Length: 177
Image (cartoon, rainbow, N blue to C red; front, side, top):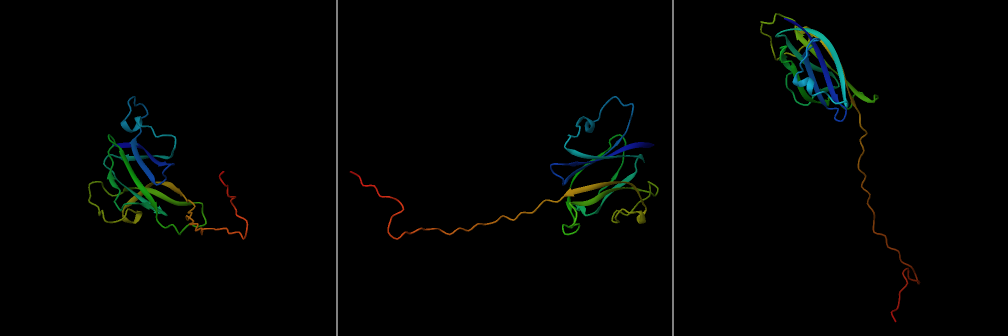
């Protein structure tokens, strides 16, 4: 069965390294809400949305490219089922902080691939999803991570200062009566 799927990428503005991926079947006449729709994303999240068509049981994979990568090295390969959808949360990082030095942000992308071969054939999970390995690129979402100015804490070493006067005292001495 073919579904119209709404793909969302949510990036928290307060923590730009936090990313959420959602893939849900889009039903225009649906009266009920799923748990994901009830937890509406707060306005402080950047959203990227795209619609695509997917078959029940399609094998999908997410791949990062550019100067953005995942903090952990797990494979993001999953099987799509319309009745439950997909919701994944993960942390991203800058792959190489020395590249893109002239830009204000680090640029990268999240690519969504679908396995193009027959769904019931086995595929090699060790290979990175790409067009050369039998996958089809379905969606690509831009990711931006702002650069922060790195400030080095400055240690101020102050020597003890002593002032000596020849003759008059700095503090007048009071004699008690």
